[in-house]
Length: 383
Image (cartoon, rainbow, N blue to C red; front, side, top):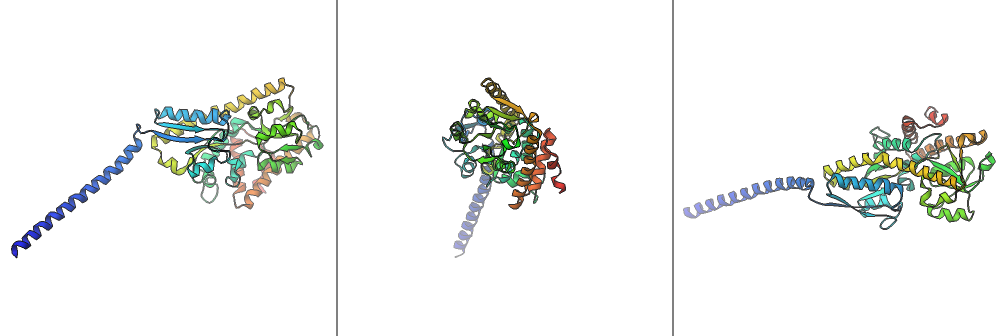
């Protein structure tokens, strides 16, 4: 009996030692696993393949001169660890579904155009507000500062936190300023403005058209050339730099310059989850690449605009400076600018968004970069 008890005690001790050894081994293994995960994430020999897409054509300035250089720079900075599998022209994702494709995992990185989705990104339209003076570089720098701002906009959140929650974004340059171009219709008097039919690319332009008596026509850009050729409407709000994408340089014959009808914006976007999964050195490479390509991307819009103006003038097109228009025409256009800002602010306020705050932030950033707005827009916070 005593001998049996001794063997039972001895066996129990052995079992306890074995269990302790296994437990210690598990702790060490777990620690090694965690460290190994970190090491693996930082291991530059592990390939990272990201699927990138746009619904725009491969020749579009945002893709060809911003997105592609960004991807190439990221690949260079990571010594080829990061590779991009690319899709353009609606091969995988159509515009404006890039944001949704990023969120549902269809793609890892997208060229996102938030203005096309005002229900999801209502405050992204702020860059389309008309101005009395701006250019591509002014607006691009202001847009970048707005997206990257740490300033509280409302409810303790920044602009990006309120507008792009769930995304990690890199703002791209805006387009060149939008102008009014027609197939020949001229604005020699206020009556020439009222009743003119123009294609409007955003809600902001629809508001402006309503305020100035212009008939707004909603239509995809790809359908505009045929419609204007048939005389279905007389012109459009559009960026001169983007004419070549649709052949408008062959069609527009009269363009008002020197007044600004907004800047369309864009961004490189990925989900916040995808961003957090990337190794830190890859994140750093993406941020550095973004800084490198930002201003050259803006310059591309300006270069394309110069080419379009030169070609269009050689084909008989006319560019009229705003200050050369009749004073009543100028006043009518400027009053429309002022009314559009107020209407947009009210639109945001009615939807529970900080209309005055985001409009003031955008205005102040523009002015800081050299832009100008009408006096009434400078004073709206005082009313």
